[in-house]
Amino acid sequence: MRLTTAFPFSSGHVQTLFPPFFRPMPEVRYERERLETSDGDFVDLDWSRGEESKGLVFILHGLEGHSRRKYVLGMVRAARLHGFDAVAMNFRGCSGEPNRKVAMYHSGWTRDLHESLLMIAARTGYSSVHLVGFSLGGNVVLKYLGEDPAVIPDIVGRAVAISVPCDLEDSARALARLQCALYSRYLLDQLRKKIIEKSRLFPGTLDLTGVEKLRTFRQFDDRFTAPLHGFNDALDYWRRSSSRQFLSGIDRPTCIVNAANDPFLGPQCYPVREAKANPSLTLLTPATGGHVGFVGSGRDGMYWSEWMTMQFLRGLQGR
Image (cartoon, rainbow, N blue to C red; front, side, top):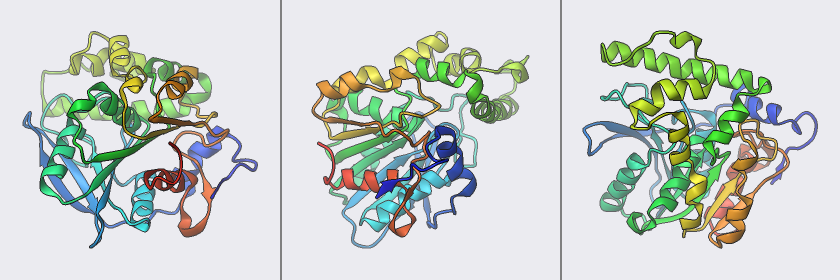
């Protein structure tokens, strides 16, 4: 399958914006399961299963996404077409129901992924579980695989991380550029709405003074993300949660797919040195693709990123 590169798809912005606005909604049926977490909260898992599959693809969405985003549904559909079952995890507060605690999720929050995988390993008969993460979810996947490989369940096989801000500080700088104002405004609006809802659910716990004036991720993360999740400030949060520092520890076959024209990523989000040093890592940097775009033309309506992911998970591409 070829990645669509002809004008206007040579533009990273077109690649980024075309799928959410113009891609037909991939048809997927889910069954929801609620996982009660060890700290008294919950995450919702949305399953798409067949009758004879032995392998599972576990999918993590991006910042303020959920399991019904087109890019998640497209990957679920691709997994099913290639003989896998699929499950999409909704980060805390992203499944349509607020989570039970003031704290929610963040780019380095790997606990819920780990507990979900332990549950799957204990209760199901899958021979392998492969991980796929988009954007923030890709950072979570990479950090999880590299921060403490000894605790990862043996059932975990391969992984693909797509459009990954593996250096969060550098990504924040990229998103603060004028050309990215549309993306930043949309994401910060979503985060503001969630914080205001949290304040309503937990009166007196959050100071909303001036929340409508927050214009950058540094301002938002300094004010809310960092203190809610035990970090000193935005820089402390970004530096401790960025997955790039953990890439050397990854020992499962893992592919990172970051388009060269991704408007969300700065130069430090392309871990060329780490990929060369670690035989378990494959880094793909196609010239176009944008952020979670990778529009492609091929059979079954799959996008290039979905086709490539299935090739890698089946051991047909990469190391």
